[in-house]
Figure 1 (cartoon, protein in one colour):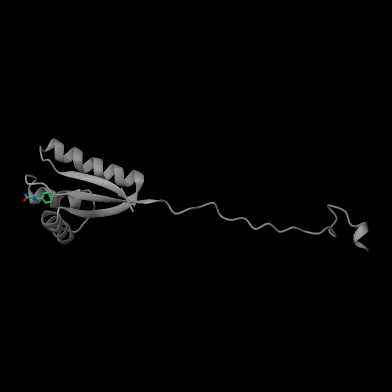
Figure 2 (cartoon, rainbow, N blue to C red; figure 1 turned 30 degrees about the vertical axis):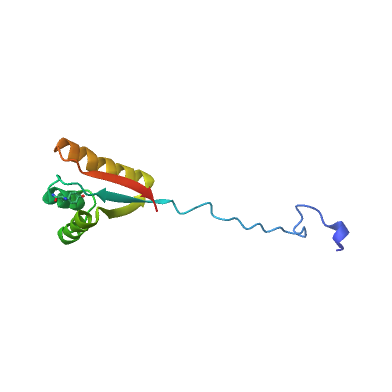
Length: 108
Ligand code: TYC
């Protein structure tokens, strides 16, 4: 059969293959940073790092001491909602316990 006699829907019609891209993007990630102060007890900071950020006691103590000496330290990297929730949990708990501990989030 010549090309002229082909019709759309015929199994002789030319086929077009369209590649689709999967519409998924990696989410932007956010760092949760802990700030030093002169008043929050070291043990409280270690507790926060263990219970809110899931750190081992050893990692929690290491991060706390890093913040104590350097002024700021990384608690973890999360999607926006998780980072914001954890930072709020830290500040809320510190506030309830009357400690001035502060946490911030920053785009990675
Ligand atoms: N600097 C505090 C102290 O000497 C301890 C501390 C560590 C406070 C880390 C906050 O994010 C912090 N008691």
